[in-house]
Amino acid sequence: MKVLVVSQYFWPESFIINDLVKTLSAQGHVVKVLTGKPNYPDGVVFNGYSASGAQEEKFESSVSVFRAPLRPRGTSGAKNLVLNYLSFIWNGLKHYPRAVKGEAYDAIFVFAPSPITSVIPAIYLKWKLKSHLVVWVQDLWPESLSATGFIKNKAILRVVGWLVKGIYAFVDTLLVQSRAFRDPVARYANPGKVVYYPNSYQDVPPSVEETRIPAPLLAELDNHFCLVFAGNLGTAQSVETLVEVADKLRHLSQVRIVLVGSGSMLSWIESQKKSRGLDNLILAGRFAATEMPHFFSRAQGLLVTLKQDEAFSYTIPSKVQAYLAAGRPIVAALDGEGARVILEAGAGLTTAAQDAEGMANCIEQLFRMTSDERESLGQAGRAYYLEHFEMERQSQRLVEILSSRINELKGISK
Image (tube, rainbow, N blue to C red; front, side):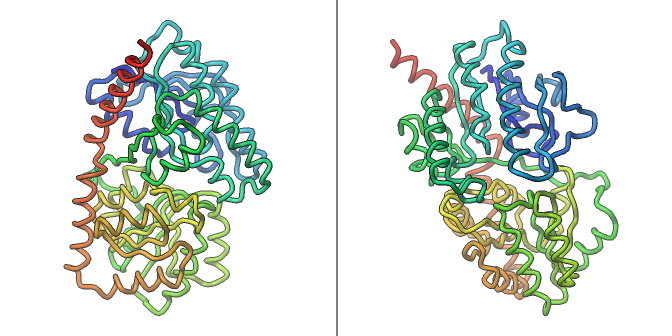
C-alpha cells in the first residue's frame, strides 16, 4: 500500500506516528511524510532545522520526509499557538501539493492530535490526488479546548464545533484512539465513518549501549523506590497533582517522584519544588525516546495523570501503552477509559483524576507490596499490551482497515 502521512508533528519530535511510519515501511509499504519543522514541546525549532524554507530528508533510510516552513509555537501564550496552527495550514496548502506532484497514493493518513485544523491541507490533497482520506483522531475538538481552558467562550466553542463538522465531512474514515471517542466524534460526523483503532507502542528493550542518563540520576533510580512520570508536562497532565503527591509522601524517605520530560508547566513545577523544599521530587529533564526503557526498567512504578474533565475521561493517554509494554506497575490518577484499561489489564492501581490524596495512598500501597506482587502487576500489564497494543500487529490491522474501507467506498460509488 502507498500511504501519504500528513502530520504537524513528526520525528525528531517524540510521537507515536514515528514508530507507526517506521513499522509500515518495514512491512513493505511505501510511506511519505508531509510535516513541518520540529519544535515541540519547547516551542523552539530543533538544532539542524530552520523555521523558514522547505526541506526534504530521509527517515529510517526509506521514508521520504518533506518539511514545509513553520512558525514555531513559542514558549507561551495563546497567540503564539494559534499562529503556529495557522502557519501549518498556510504552508501546507502552499508547499505540499508541489511536494507530491505526479505521485499517487492509496490513502492520505492524518495523525491528528491538537489541532484538528491540521487536516485542512490534507483535504486539499485528497481533492488533488483523488485518494482516500483517513484521520486518526487523538484529541476531541472542541471538547479538549474547553477542558484545557484554551477557549472558554461558548459561542467560540460552538463555531469550532461547526469547523470540526465541516472538516469531518470531507474525511472518508475517522479512526478513534479510544472506544469512548465513538459517540463524541459521531456528533460531528457520519457514525459509519468511525472506526476504533487504538494507539500502539513499539516495544524497544533497553539498549546494550551505555545510557546517556547522568550518573547522579541513575544513582537515584537504582538506590530509591522511584515512580517515573514520562512525557509532556502541560496543563492537561494535571502536574499539580504530582506536586501534591510528592508533598504527601515526605514521610516515605525512600520514595522519589521522577518527572522525565518538559512542557509549559515545567517552570511552575520548578518553583513549587524550590518553595516547598520537595527533595523527593526529581526533575530529570527531557531525554530521547531511546532512553525511556532505561528509566522504565529501573522504576518501581510508572505514573499517569490527567485533569478532571469529561473530555479527558474519553482519552487513553499514549503513555499508558508504553507503560504496559514496560511490564512495570502503573499508578494512575485519571477517569474513564484510561483507568478502565489499567484495571482491565490488572496492571496497577488507580484513583480519580486530580485526587492527590488517593494517588499518594496508591503509591504507598505499591511501596508496601512484596516485589513478587509488584512483578505480577507488571507482567499482567505486559500481557495485555501484547494482546491489544503491540505495534507490529496494529500496523497490520491499520492496513486491513484501510483496504476494507477503500474497497467499501469503491463499492458504494459503483
